[in-house]
Image (cartoon, rainbow, N blue to C red; front, side, top):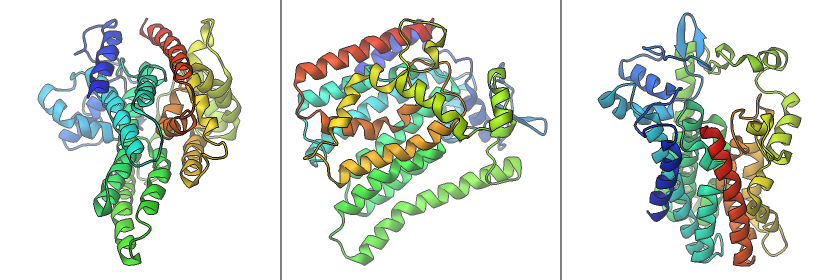
Length: 390
């Protein structure tokens, strides 16, 4: 609870520099989609003031983003209308993420997934909340950021439930959480590799019939979610595999690349690698909002490499690494780097498993070193958040 409240307070202070917390952002598209759902339709019933990145098809506006955030917003939009504050909603989601990460680290320590004391866990929570790209997404609302933070919430919930729960309930709740993550950002189904393997390993001693029943409970929500997503696309665009991305009203800066290479292409790997792992945005310049190196901006993440040292390597460590790799593949193939951002925004998708690797790798590091690297990260991202709020 302490992490949630502190994060909410700090994120809110940054957000207040743009206006009252109950304001709507310039792009509260999930509010409009929630309104459409409440009125029994899939296209937007009311057209927002700005239509950047909306999909325009057969004279109607749609969202190409998956709909789970809109589902969460439906009760609020039903009461307050489409002008309900997506900024406040996103602030709360971001603070919940911090609380979930704190609980995940605590439970992971109790179940011996990691070996970190309370002090080190506190440093890691502070690092996640204030020293990663998470803080730059939290104060602004906007469809892109709301989507990503909501997806991280469900991923963190899946990891927490995998570690904490037992038996059929564990498989079912983890399956539901991963389904919700997938229905927010589709490729985050790959984030489920580690929790799935952890659950299988934890229940390896039960009889095979029970294992099949557990596995079915975990996979059923995912299969149902895939079916619902396919139906959602088919009812909008006549194709279960078409999410509307080819109809979206993209920024003109991307049009030429899109026409030549499409939305996913190996052509984009070098620029994504550069802005996610190499570029350093200081001193501030015009390209600073294109991204920034994951490890230079958040140097405590270097501890993840120490997790691969002999003595730390086990199936769980390798599974965490494999999960990060699988989630990274679509990110590296994606057109654009996240664009108006500060730091590697898309790497937030795999920050939960990366943070567990960091906890493993830093377990023998000196506390002053962890604190120093965390403070460097916080300085980076406080400056970056101020830049984005200007």
